[in-house]
Image (cartoon, rainbow, N blue to C red; front, side, top):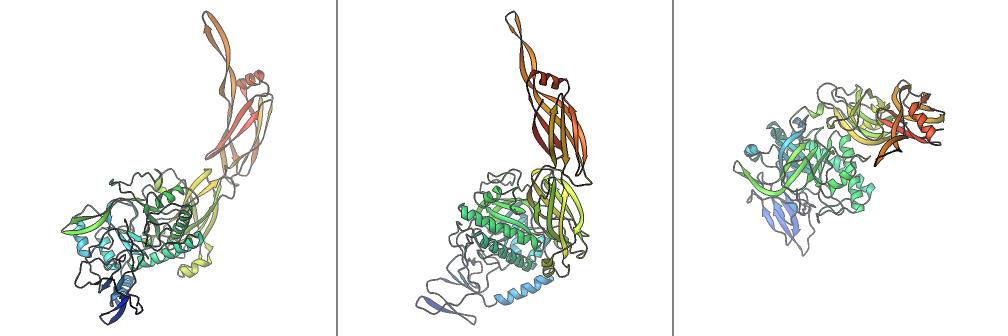
Length: 574
């Protein structure tokens, strides 16, 4: 997806008559066009690429076997005069409504893929079944899309997914304010406006996906080309992409982002594990020739594992079955559209807010329902530590809690109704900064749906209220901050540096010396009921007597630990 400047005026906006314009008559249309622009009759050039980045006039229907460069993108300023386009678009919409939507794979596709500026014809796709590729990027829309898409219809999508091609739906919308694409339409430098533009882009992307027969649950990747990482450009781009992700989730689709490793991906990686609403999938461009998604200098080793695409080579020609296409190379270990359980069967919803209202507790809110049973409450599961497939996460089954009224849902999903919101708090075994992922559990056909992941800071749910030392004992008051009905199992340890005698030789003489060594004075297990406190009396034993006899008011260190967290205190022994 290396891009140069692009332009398109859809179906030819009429230009005013002037000395710099000329009039073209074509199939009943009378169109004013710039005098210096070349005019191409597509019926005479069936393989000509209708490039939307060139100052040119195209007359007629774009061919199904266009010879396009893989790297075209930019603002729409070419003129395409195609009198039959509106009728064909209306017919495509009608046919799309009768064709089952493409299915989303229940497991990430792994293997080689390619992307081309325009979707290849059915004949070309058939010829390429002998290629090493089984995934293809499809540019479904966007103001900066570089090529016409006469082949990308719902029937094309249905046929290719039935032929076991995995699709990578891609949307080429507004670019970063400092984008390397000089003629591209840019997003605003205002973070508020950029967020609004991100929401609008996602809404249009879903409309285009549905016209193409790409159903809910599928990913849509935003193509954000390389840009200079100034503070204002980064902030605007991140605001745009967060809004893109939020809107896609709300409409039942997964969010993906394509960008250069050194710009968009680097900015997203810097936010990974924070409260930023990150995309589900990333697609990073690094043309190092390595067909692997395992590592990249700009992607943290533990980030988006199993949810990556690596574009490892730029535009070049490849030929299979006698058909040549200009492509970029990709290695895919991420979500695609095609092959698997029907996406329409999966739950829909959004994970909106996370907080920690009390030590050791997390509160989540959002909404979810299942199209298979739109009036039945959906069960929610939360995983502390990441997604299910990332390993090491602790799961919490919260039950069918998606029952609260949400007035915004009624307008969007009248058949399901408004009673699908959730707002619930629960104790967790974990403290500090934690990544929490929330799932809507499937009812009937389909699979569980990831509603999103967010990061939250969780205070440790144990408090040391008081400590007091007297003689050879320490009294410690501890409170369990988990809610009533739970139990804090834990342990207390007291450590200190105590004197130890040792002998050294100086010739024939033996000299006794003292050194301080770290020693465990006491180890005590305990259990406290949630919301309760207790004062424990800990004897320090023989090592404690040695310590208090050897030094005046020596210091020790208290550690109180429960699963998922611990607190420490300094003790002055008396």
